[in-house]
Length: 201
Image (cartoon, rainbow, N blue to C red; front, side, top):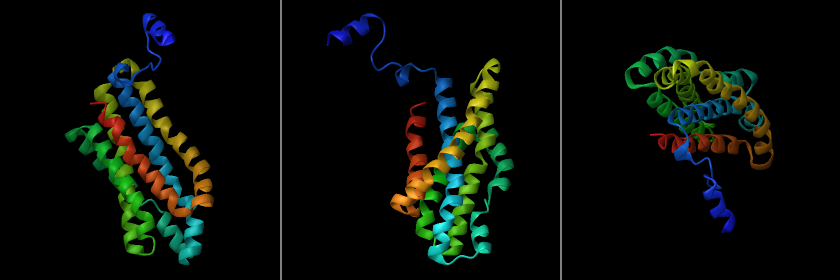
């Protein structure tokens, strides 16, 4: 009690920095970078899970390659920029994260039905493909010119962090909980991500 009161007298709380005290632009950059961490975690998870999945479903190398190909990613980048100009990068990222996260959650459910599995991968690719253009638009709209280069580096640096994290975490999850757990857990991260994002409003 005494420690808490003395902390307040000094001008800060023990829980500092509180979310509400963080400048809005920093919240946006932080949550967008986190979205890109999750983005690449979801991008690499199948490259780790493909081995036990191929054994379970009897896929040959051609089928495994077809499943792993990131359908929809390249095709959605140009529309992502166009949609961001109309609706704003923030809204496009929110929808993109929700789309790829739900599609990731569906992979274990649809793994035994190839057309459905390919459709889920297409949705993952589309959701992730619109995100780079949307992030660039969000930064241009929300961040002062003198801070934009640092903001871009921080946001897109999340992609590298996500790749490393995905490759480190996925094998452990598969070994302990089965290959399905990678898609369920990584997908839930994207759904959870929307909570702090909405608090940026």
